[in-house]
Image (cartoon, rainbow, N blue to C red):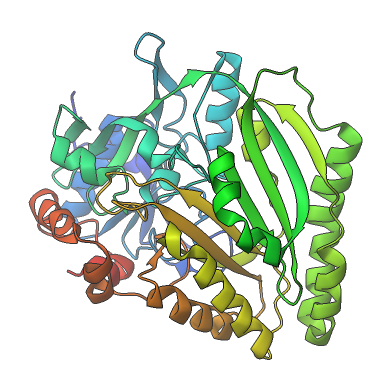
Length: 450
């Protein structure tokens, strides 16, 4: 594939503009001031932008929709915006794959696949991210056998530090494929992803309140009996809300418009926004609010196509930390977290989210080589979160926890070398693909070294 002419002043002028305003992520907890932004309309233009940045002595980072809570995409050099690199390149029904441009939002991909009678096997609980941003940081849903979005990748195309375009899969550059599916932006700029897809199917979701004691006591059975099991625990209470998703023969029975408005918009977003604002202003009200909130959602069952079951609107902004612990350690870890909250003076208005994933073979996946359970803690945007997250992180790391690459944590390369046996493989590959650290930033220096 041709990579264009990096010396063309016309191309560079069309691609780049000086950045006057700082870039901010979705949560507002990360800002950056890049020298310039580039919005390439083709792989050739992206390659030219990478070479031009190297010529100018500037670092390069690609950014999606900013849904990471870490500074993984922050740069003071050149910020690549991929919003013109969108759409489906190819659908191969015989192979069961779809190749999509890197800047395509997951929402757009899901809608397009549904129109073609296809679906991803599993996905996370929101779909605002770009496909490259979501996979580069290890975005995941919950599943007994079906793993993260990155684990559904069958091929990748990326622009490396010298501006060349590299294709990788299990057969082509397999060592790059093993790492780049969750590459943290350290190996190059992804331009296209090939995902495994399957004929569209139906899922029946069963949402049901349950006590904390019952969920933790019955967790192994709930996990084993359901293809996708997750739950939310409401701090300051003994209450949880559970969700079980399983494949269904139908018929389709979606959430009614009234129920969708009442529970997904009014209660889960509108009222939740209001009570969090009240809790931020008057923290002493939070335990009482939590008791009411934990009982607000009623049991319901519905059947729909996958993305309408897996994903939900999330309009209330927050800051999040999430750790993956060995699945066998989940219940003990969660009970320690609850005990810590109960003993403390912390006031927490957001529920704690718990999900699972099978082991995978991706070098820096949070589920690499082990069955995992995820515990996510959140705080409402603008609320001090450091004390809560620090206490939670102390518990998670005691159980060999691996933090989500796109969510708040304080771990560094020394820690990661103890919980990722294959970290050395990743850094050796980085030395080969980006010896001058064109794609480096402060976050990468902290988590994988320099």
